Length: 505
Image (cartoon, rainbow, N blue to C red; front, side):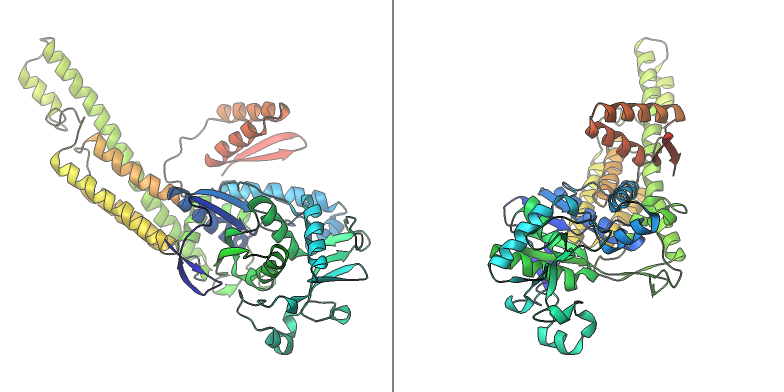
C-alpha cells in the first residue's frame, strides 16, 4: 500500500511504527455551529481510510478532537447570552447526529480541548524550560526560528514568510521576539472562559491543543496525521514544531490532506450565499448520497459541489442499490422455487404424484437438476472466480493512496457483471456470493446499499423507551447502540425539554 505524504510530496510505501497497528489523528471541527459540507469531506474521507485499514487487518486507534474553546465559540455564546460550554455541548451533539447520518463511525477517542488543559500547560512548560518558548506579560510564544526544520511540511521558507507574506504573520508582533512566533497561551479577556497557569489566567492557543491530545491518546509518535489542506499552514506546521521540540522525536510519519470543496466552481462562502450545512443538504438528499458524492473523487483532488453532481451521485448510488435489491429478489425467487420443488419431491416419494408431475413442478428453475441449489455448477464456479477478481481490483485501487473513485468504479463493474450474468436460474450460493461481494465492498467505503426494512412507529417508540431506560441506568454503550441503530434506519432523535422526539429522514 502506498500513500501520498504531504511531508515528502510523494507517494511512499505504508509501513507502521508497530506491526499491525495504526495510530491516526484527524483534526476535528470547532463546534460553534452546525457542520457544513466542507467539514464533512475530511470526516468522510478519513473514516473511509480507517475502514480500509481495518479491512486490511490493522488495529486502528483513531483519535479526532472537538475544539470546544475558541474565539468563534465565545462570540456565539455572547451573542446568545449563554456560556461557551453550552454552545460547544450543543454543537458537539449536533455534529455527532450528522456524523451518524453520514455513517461516519465514532472515533476510538473524541477528546475535547477543555478537558486537556493540564496537559497543554505541561507541554508549554516543557517548551519554556527547553528554551523554545517565552512569556511576555502572561502570553507565551513559541520561538519559531529556534526549530530548524520549521516549514518542512508546508515547504515554506521562513525568510520568505517574513518579507513577502505579511498576511501569514501572527498578530501581536510588537511584543514578540520575531513576528513569526506564534501563541501557546494567552491571558483571558473579560467574559471569556479561563484556566489558571504559571503565566496567567487564560486559555491555550489553538495549535497546542492537537499536539497535546495526540500525545495523550496515541503517544509521542504517530503513524498518520490528517485533515483538510487548509490546515497544512500554519496549524499542522506549528503542531510539528511544538511536538518535535517537546518530545525530541519525529511527530508523525505520514501527513494526509484532503483538497478543498467548492460550490458551483466557487469557494464556499456565506457572503456569496453558497454556504451549505450538512443538515440543509440532508433535507434534500439521503445522507448516503452525500457520502457517495464525497468519495466519487480522489481525496486530494478539488471537489466541486453542484445540484447536477449530487443528482449524478444519487443515480450512481441507486444503480448499486438496485443491483443489490435485484439479487435479493432473485434469491427469494430461488428460495420459493426450492420450497416448491422440495414439496414435489416429497409428494413423489409419498406416492402422491408420478415422476412426470415431479419434473413439471421442478422444471421452473431446474433446481432439482442442480441438486436443490445446494452447490454450484462448473460454470458457476467460474463466475465465482471472476467475482474474486473484482475484490482484488478494489484493493489495488485503495492501495494506491486510497483511490475511492477507482474503487467505486470497480463496484460498478461488479454491478454490471451481476446484472448481465446472474438470473433466478443460478444457485442461491452464487447469488448470495454476488450480493455479499457488492455489499461488503460498499461497506468498506461506508456506503449502505442494502434496502432498509422500515421500522414501524411502535418499534421506534419502544427503542427510544429502551434508550431512555439505558441512559437512566448509565448504560451509555447500549444507549449509543440504539441511537446508531435508529440512525442507520434513517431515524433522527431530537432531545428536547419535552422529551425525545424523532423524525424519519
